[in-house]
Length: 440
Image 1 (tube, rainbow, N blue to C red):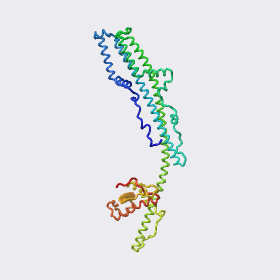
Image 2: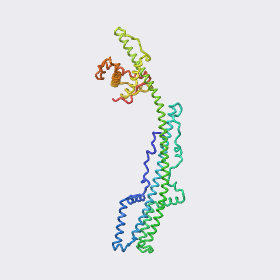
Image 3: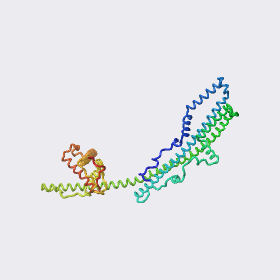
Image 4: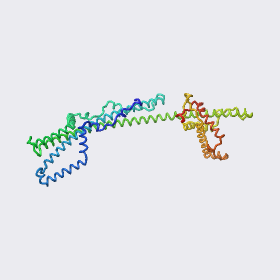
């Protein structure tokens, strides 16, 4: 997948239960669930039933209208339970639909993660072959679940209703788990009471014992349907949990494979980097020496031409191979610091490819390079002095002066060496580039 293209998951929001509540009816069911499904409502119901039972027992007017065992209270309780059963069925349908959508979204997101993992593994494999001349640095197979995931659909609640009885329960949940069923039940109860009170129907007068019986029977049916639905949702949840577990296991397996690849590549890269760094340092140190030798030779020639005196070894150019080990080590140390010093002024060193792009150092940058290198040189001398006291016993014990206290003539020597850095870099086969345009 092209990294410039927007990821599909960046254009979607997580699935919420509110996404499944569409329309006025679902809004009513949600409002009833929020208001009734709370502990204050439970406390209110308990208090109301307790007060009513106490009044019906001890207050004569209410006792004559609804004596123990409180037929009206029993009827009202059955009606409320019937309504709540329908609301629970609506909530169960909403939960099931939202869970199905979440399952699909999780499946699609996991598939995109697996695709990215496969692409990363392929990229690392190409790097392996480039680093190891065609051989893979890690011989291991991808997790088998990555391939199985593509051909296995996300778990849905409908897929778990496999038996005839499960399908009947799913059908009842779909039909009864709606606000229209809630309206129908409530309307039937109200109409039944109105017909009884107006004398249209006389076989179930107050306290509506037959309606109470029907409500109890309906509650029993709905409770069983709810329990079947809970069982189906539980099996679906188990399947989703199993799939999520396998997804996480596959991702963890691939992450470990990538870590092993990185470790193997690090060994090769460290080896290559050490070799390249050593070669670059050697070339820079030799180029620094050759440049310094030519500058010193030109100075001796100029002195001979202006004074008429020929300095000792005026025509000698000391080859790099004939230098003492101590001098070559000092040159290598100075060469290793070139990249660090260039970085401090916003430049870096790359293999030469276009001379026109080479950075031109201004006076402030040259002065900064000279000051940095002089600081390193001064620190090296102080460290060497206190490390090898026996070698410094008979030498001058004066400490080097800070850069700002150096005479102009002494600073000039270091400034010239700093100005020659681009030349040294070029002779070593590299060039200096500027990381960002110079300000002003």
